[in-house]
Image (cartoon, rainbow, N blue to C red):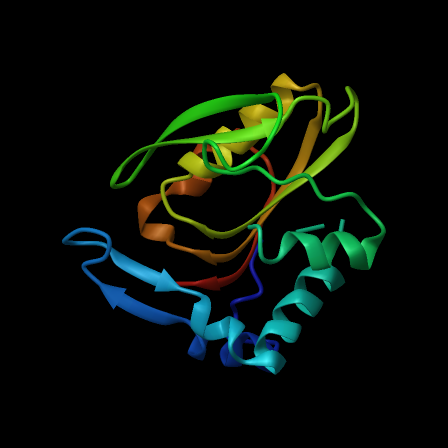
Length: 171
């Protein structure tokens, strides 16, 4: 599902605040830089509002305010060695290399429902790793939500049929 059909004028404003950096982090990648969106308080608030309006919930930048808005806990999934204490991990392949996500042991109780929020879905590697990690901990992943989708890379196709909510498509 996507609201990038232009029905909501906030989506156009959000899209214009995302800077594209060619050939980063390697040649051929058109990096979607959301830091410019975060510098615009209104566009950042509109992004959170659009996600929250959608909830059932919705990276790391968008997840905490959304969790607060809906009264849910926020469980960070981080790169290796960023979380103290005992963690479980999941390795995955990116469009430009390999990576790993970690989560605190015990952060999820078996049977809890989880929504995965990230800034971008490209090949789907990060979302799939997040789903695998949460499901290994016993969670039921009910939906994924991302600010940006790169539909040409077909990451959506790797999500095992999970719903994916997108605000902006980038081609």
